[in-house]
Amino acid sequence: MLKENNMVELYKTFGTIGFDNVKEISTELLPFQPSLIELCKQNSCGNYGKNYTCPPHIGEIDELIKKAKRFNTALVFQKVYRIEDSFDFEGMTEANDTFRKSVQRVNDFCKENLSEFLLLGAGGCKLCPTCGMETDEPCRFPDDALASLESYGIFVSELASVCGMNYINGVNTVTYFGALLYDKSTPVT
Image (cartoon, rainbow, N blue to C red; front, side, top):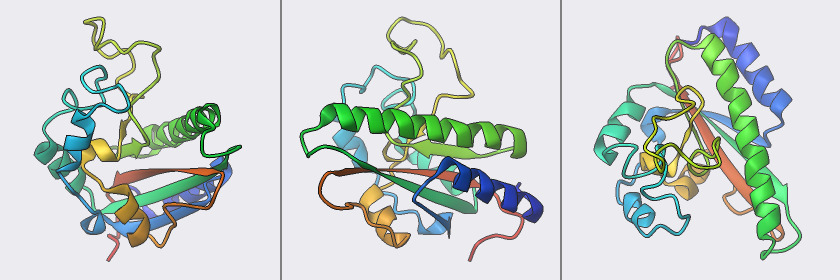
């Protein structure tokens, strides 16, 4: 549980990292859509079955949603990155790597200040060049491996709307979202 006096530090951390938008909401407002798992099964990202933080290895979608709903507060965060054009896959990859590093900084804060939390980012974990899943090894960094919002069945474009954030932020941009789920001493209403 995060006490009120630590809320200031949490928001300072988010500000220092440089997210463009941060919005606190009740986890009751998270737009879960279990059918998102079907998109994962299409394997357009190449991680299906090859990453501990992605389906099917992350767990059953109903259990993941139940786990997320155990918390009373979600801090949803967003970062918009400029890219050269809509075909700038190198720029998108670089932006995603930068976003992942930012989310890891949030994870470091949370490990020091929260007894229980769930931190979700964009895309499956990429801490290791090859996930231990593919080499029959346990996860090498279980405290740092982070799953995506989508792997927990959260419909990100609807989440953006719930939070008053833009999902699409104009031409030559790519936008990434994450969320920190935790129990606040005074629940959000």
